[in-house]
Image (cartoon, rainbow, N blue to C red; front, side, top):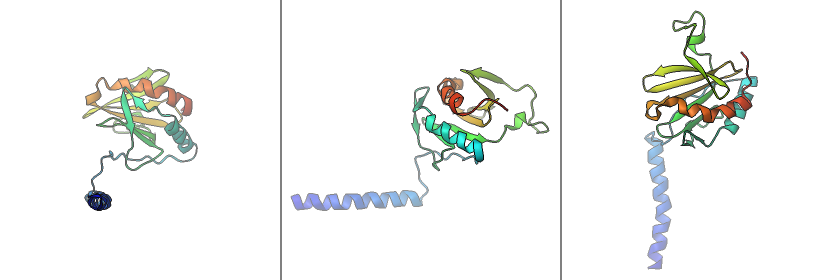
Length: 164
């Protein structure tokens, strides 16, 4: 009987390896894919500092790992609340842009000013009046979507300086 158990134990890791290889080849991944921004210089340094300081949970949602892994992104929950640091200035704030709005919806939440943009499934919030733009996309499942922002504010205030 002991010999049989040993054979099963030897085959089990091989079966897991085969299953992982098949899943990888099929493109299966449980981690959400998040587009990675490409900040440089001081913005990249500040985004890395933010990444290290981010909370383990926002609005009760546990932190996960996005694909690809990056110091410029973070996720919480399933479906994922996505944070991207070092994104370009939102179109709604760019003079001359097709979507420019001189009076966009925005509000201050715990010392951080946010631009609010309604999406097909939830909201996208982007910091304004900070040296680096930080974008947070929240699925409608978590309505009111704004509830994640108070948990992010301390990290943003500590790592992304105010200014334009």
